[in-house]
Length: 291
Image (cartoon, rainbow, N blue to C red; front, top):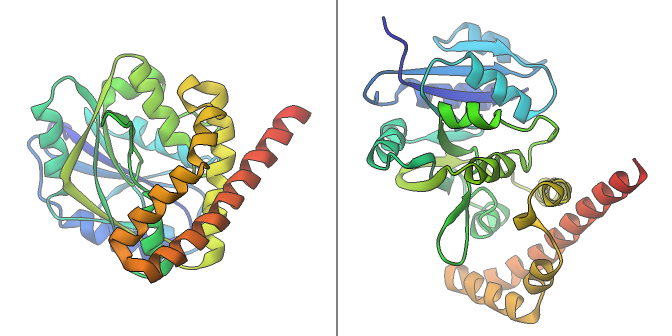
């Protein structure tokens, strides 16, 4: 049989229960034209992940334990498809997800990357805050241009991945590597777009601690990104984001989606999250200076 046109790539580590849930959703996927395969990269799991994979029909490879970027590179390089879709082990794609992603790329031959919709799998104060903050959403400019895609729900043409060398493996923690990839694809002339009908539900981590750790990692990643991409620099943009006008606009957004009580809670969470982001950025900057 000919190689499938579409490959789904998932990197995983020590999340056997979530991976089982994801594989069930992928097994139920409608098949896009040209066929489909799933490639899972087990990046050094010590739980029952290997047993889950051995009992499934998916292809799996062993990662190098050098972070999500390296694991995803191992996945797409082992895959056969000319279209590579990425999702995460804490996600649940809708049945027609792959079909919608491929259709969106087929409608727009000039696009080299596509991002689908990301909605929360569960609801709660922290989960809803993370969603309102677009913590796992794609980046857009004020003009509506798609700046970057997040791998919870993204697809790229294989040719684009090969052209830029895939993910930068120096991003050793799960933050920033997908933004960096998107910037490099755009920098070589590749357009990015959105497929709003291609839905993935994402399991945001519940709890205050996991939220702060996520923002801390994002701060570290932003420090790394700013040295690689002029558009990701700090300074004026950061000052604007922290201005009273920006906070007022954010509060109005919170109030519109959750009412006054939620808006007050979200604002308190944003204050704490902003502090964690700055702490992560500062720590990474100090390491940068001392190295």
